[in-house]
Image (cartoon, rainbow, N blue to C red; front, side, top):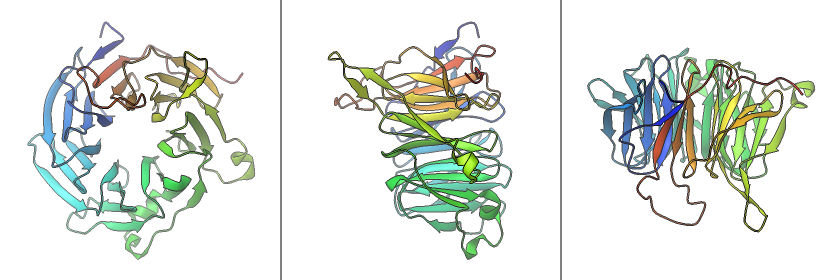
Length: 340
């Protein structure tokens, strides 16, 4: 690629809810409120739309499965689906009793986790496709899910947060009842918008509707918990000189350097060193709200989805307001700067 950023041709026609790069290629899944999941090849400028898969209702999340030829989706039709990306065949794995906000695939344990606004998780044991999913009741609606190699973090309404051990979720005795490894309350005072786990399995970042990000560690020791902190971001001055606070809609950790990106309703994407507590850089402003982020598996590319977030009070999705940008990262561009 000769330019650091390009926009994908043939974007969705309505707001984008989620994007995800394939683990081992530059294929990209895009889930949209236009009731479709899009599959792109982003290896060349402009990208190539390989296929799109229609659903019965807006799609809220999508992820790749065991290979780049398999995807899982979730949305407002209440269903969790598997899609064979080669043949286009869709299979319903389970149905919740309300919209399904999140779906995640854990390669190590070969399980699929879905989180629904019916306040449940469904744990699908993919090696036993005929078995019904294990259902876990939650105290609140889940807003965002994220995985490490050993843990699942569930961020919910009322600032509640549960952390599960993936080995417990994958256990054959899981149907007998699974308790969280930890129960926490968010460090942020307002509703959680996104959560993302550190690739080194040591902690996670979470964001809120009130322009803040919190960084926390799993280790429950007093020493480790004393390291947690929160900071303001994605705030822009109004013409009157007053800070306008925007939601932080998206978080994504770099798979190699362990830094993370945040995307906000202000249209900005910023890179952060969570350990050193420093902002690395901020990119140019996009035309509208940043709705989702994803780093490629090799860490060389960052996908940025933009969609109207209606922060300005205007409704409707106009032409050119929805798009996906692929940014090529320079060597060391996402590398931390070290402690002050």
